[in-house]
Length: 226
Image (cartoon, rainbow, N blue to C red; front, top):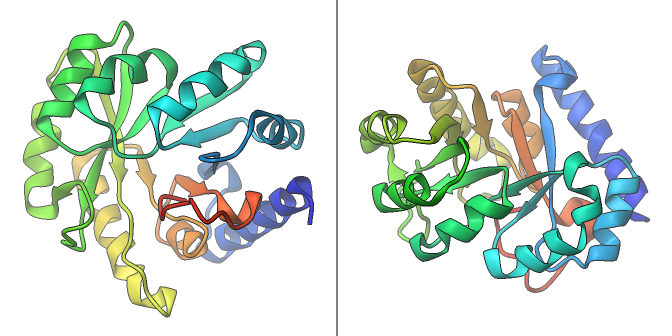
């Protein structure tokens, strides 16, 4: 199918998940993850109505964002991948929101280098997998409290990547746990759900879903951030 047809299919699935959960459609934002996707394809998605795009690597995102500068006022760029502290300054210049603040050091670097009030999400490693970044669940409340007090940072929510599962119902509790913590902390956003599990994520409260493969097709270089 075409990019536009894929987008319409994803939007329909989002709408149905919202209906099942008794949520309004405008509570969920579709972030199209464009890692390893070229500029012309991003423009195709833009022409099909997408306004939120996610990138995983600063060095790949920067030239794309520059080439698409004529659309800058209409696009919100999301940093959804692991961000190194030494790339924080560049990231704050090109992205509108960072989903993956996974350490105090990174938060401090963003605060030091940003020239604007920077919206961020705190990445939480609920499953405790060593291969995943993020604060352990037990340390997240303290981390949010500390980062909230840094200059020029606005903590807007939490983010996680669920473990792989044969049945998406097996990971529902991961999303539910994060939603409860988000609510206790009085935050707005919950960045959960990707191609394999975004419908369950929406049923459990996702406000941002990061979707790449369902829109742009399989890519052997894509990692499980989308």
